[in-house]
Every structure is written in C-alpha cells, then in structure tokens.
Image 1: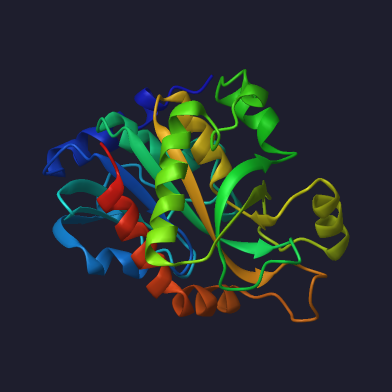
Image 2: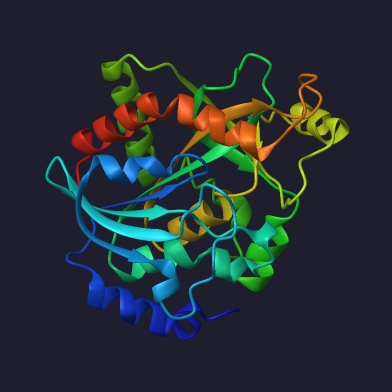
Length: 275
C-alpha cells in the first residue's frame, strides 16, 4: 500500500500554510470548465507549480491552479485542472487533489468532467449526474496499489451519505430549470479515444458516458470519509455514435457553450448545500 501521507507531506504542509480557511466544499473542475473559478469571491489563489511535489498539468483546459473562494456563505476549494493517468503519472499521483482536500478537513467534494456520450438519448451539451461507474482497469489498481480492498462494495456515487449531495444537485437543477440526465460513467485509461467496438461493448454493459478521470477520485474520497458527487458534461458523441471525428478541441468548445448552465447549477448546489 502506498502511503500518500508520507509522499505528499510537504505538499500538504505548504497548502495548509496558504489556506485562509478550512474548506466546506471541494470542487474539481473538468476539461473546459475552468472558467467557473472567475465567477466566485476569490480569497487566495496558488499555482500548483508553486507547491512541492505537485505534478504538472499538461492538458489544454487544465490550468493547474488551486483557488480558495467563498460563495453564498460557503467556504470552497476549487481545483482548476486535474492530474490524469494518461499524462504519464502514477495513479496515486492522480489522487493528490482529493488527498489534499481530506488533509484540509473538507467533508464534501463535487467532481466534474467532460465525457463522451454513449447513451443515444444524450446530446453534446447535456449535463449528467453520475449514479454508477465501471472500469476494467481501476479495480486492480485501487485494490492492490492503494489498499482499497472493498472496491466492489463502494459505489461512491450511491454511497448513503453521498446520496444527500445527489438529491441537492437534482433539486438545484429543478429550481434552475436545467435539464439533468442521470447515468453511469466508464473510466478509460486513455490517452487515445475509444474505438467504436469498445464503445459498443460499454453500451452493452449499460454505460451512458465515458471519460478518463473521476472514478478513482470518487472511490478514494469515499474511503477518506467524504461525501462525493459527480457531474459530467457530455461534450461529444463517443466513437461510432456519430461520424464526426473526436478531438479535444470539440470537448472544449462544447464545454464553453454550456458553461452558463453549468455555473448556474453549481452555484445553486452550493447555495442549497448543508455543510
């Protein structure tokens, strides 16, 4: 088992010295969703490159910044950019943002991402509340490397405490009149997009969307005693669903197009959250 407390002790210590408060809600922003940070009351901002042992984000749309902000009387830590396995990092390094949240005493975390739509009733621009997940890769890694032995029993998004966050998100969508899908998310290692045959396999397993993040973060968060919820922005049809060629540019363009709805939903969620 890898001891993240030991590996990232300097990182945690450095962030604690910068933090102006103990955050009540943590939000990790996915591809193309980073502008959300600019719409809140910023207290302190730090580049992850200024923190010791913090991996460098190399993906467009992930700026590599941590913001401490306030909104609706809530204290929030925002991660503008995440660490992906497909960037060449070890899985334990990809868990660093969640680990830091736990070290700061944060009890609630919202994970967001850009995902490819597999469910043919979904369209680019839809927002999807994550209700379940699947992965052929993470079960081995999280159970053997991270020491999380009961992976199969941990549906992080339907964990009983996490259900409260899900209900708040659904009510927030209703109040703001924002259509909100619900569905399962398949974690793929990347860095290449999936083939049409792989997507068809995922579809037969009942998967609604696919992406390259979030699941390991959610499982780790729940293992640390945090309530966790996830929202995907469906930014494109997955391979084979349409004839359009997949690209990261399309992901960013679609995320920018729907960022107004995304911001309204997350702000309403923050307002309604009981921390």
